Image (cartoon, rainbow, N blue to C red; front, top):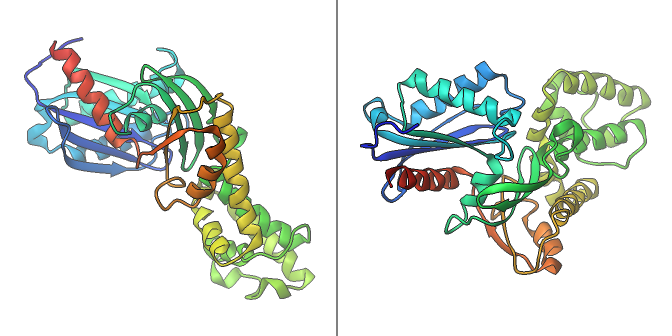
Length: 333
């Protein structure tokens, strides 16, 4: 429903699995003014009250109280949401949380609109494209074919229990699995056994300082300490262990290197599932695929035979603002 059109700011929100980021920008040229951040924003896994609180915190930081009456459009892209259907569960949860957060802050825009995080990530590429392919690899992992700025088809993005192959969570879980395999004799030696333990356990509970020389009793102690600690945390917290794999691979650890190689293959398979066409645009984003991302080079090598044009987007903030500006212009017509 149209409201007050005499407003000249827009807000773009990128609500990912790890954190929410909000940007206040001018509607005229999209130039960002201020930003805010808060906790996780997955519309399917974060409870609605908590999601609302996170959104309110991020938007409050981004929009000073004196400018809140002048916000025309708010567009938010959420992990766990998409524009495939108006009654898609993630989209409904995201819409409810976003509007509750805005009411709390006294922000009454002409339009609020919900996208998936992969849709705003795709729109973050130069020119805010409307059609092509997108791949997000951060805490989770998903690829999508975008048509008219909405997901027409997706591959993976099935969450930590059923998918997200090659994601930060997948890499972190693989690190723990490799450490446990070393401890019980199923796997070869790896630096990950010690680095995982030092990250997750109190130093006083470490069974030893040289994993390669553990006795059978120390190996069993390692497992008995580590497994309960991992099980007590939300599964997606394993994503924070991904940097340990990157570090170990950089120091020549064969087990860690193999994990990163497999992750790149899995992401390539996810893109292939969408039947990409030579010359088609592919926008990649997420912490694993940035300019210095640990999977960037490996993925590009594997995608080269497909003939795709690869663009990188830092995240979905720019795309959310671009979509908000497009909506603002449509409302004013």
